[in-house]
Length: 142
Image (cartoon, rainbow, N blue to C red):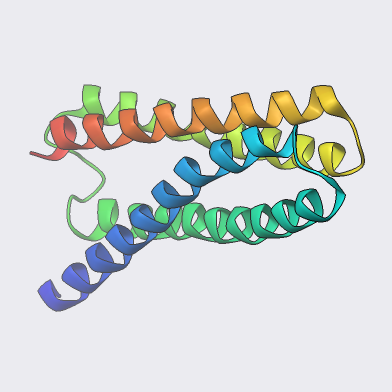
């Protein structure tokens, strides 16, 4: 069982790296879209779309492996349930930001300038929420 838990934790960490990378990259790309010319703009949207898809997959991986680890390793009880509750609230914020960012990213691709700003802000909040998730996980499980 220890090997399974260690492998799940490894996958969890890989997903964390993937999600973290996308939460850093997306606001940077979003900030460049406003001033990009037609061809560059289309290339940036293509890159952002791929990064966004990878980030959503990573978030899904984090949720699945997190639930499995919480069950198998901790039997649904973290050493500090208060910090675990903070962590889970931030996961909900992160998930909401990913949804809002994705919806507005599609609108921005269609030319909606306000949606581009909303998508960028959602990406920035997602990055902060991810940092908070990691911090609260340290206090919840360590």
